[in-house]
Image (cartoon, rainbow, N blue to C red; front, side):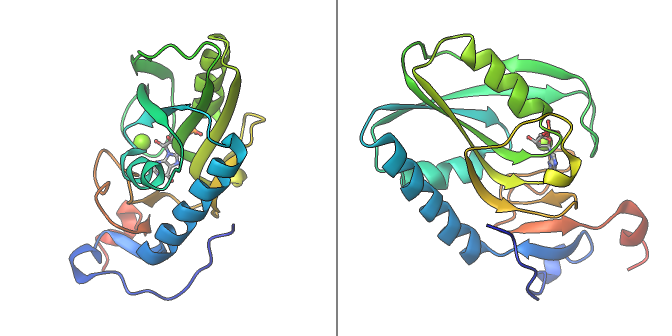
Length: 193
Ligand code: IMP
Ligand code: MG
């Protein structure tokens, strides 16, 4: 589903930092429910191991699993690209998987598929552990910046090439708590407003 631009005013509290709302809260809620239904149909009652990439998935994951009509176990991997900012650099694992996924049905969840480096790296690592089935799910897909040939099996919204924050996504660990997905003002224009 493509995120549509609609005029939604940014709450006054965030106006200095957030340029505009790309995906408002009700639209996220509806889409997350329908993605969960799709996953439920595909895995048809099998027990899932949901592997979520920290930290950006926290809000999306909490909503997604509540609508997943399947028995599941949750685990997390930590992947960090070096340094703060909007560029993704060298990847390091900051938390390893704890559950055994061999022979299991696995759903790998991330916040956003951007260059594709993170998802392809984590996916390859999971595949080495020999799951029965591995599917990938992302809230957002920004195909414009892809450098790895990877697509997610379940995508919440395809978005244009903007740096977005909120609903789990951060800039320098900030803005994860915003209930909507918003476009961050560039540091240059935030001083001007
Ligand atoms: P990739 O490895 O380039 O695909 O990037 C994946 C990671 O980069 C995501 O899990 C995010 O943490 C981060 N990222 C990429 N684009 C954005 C964005 O627009 N806003 C916030 N974080 C982003
Ligand atoms: Mg991040």
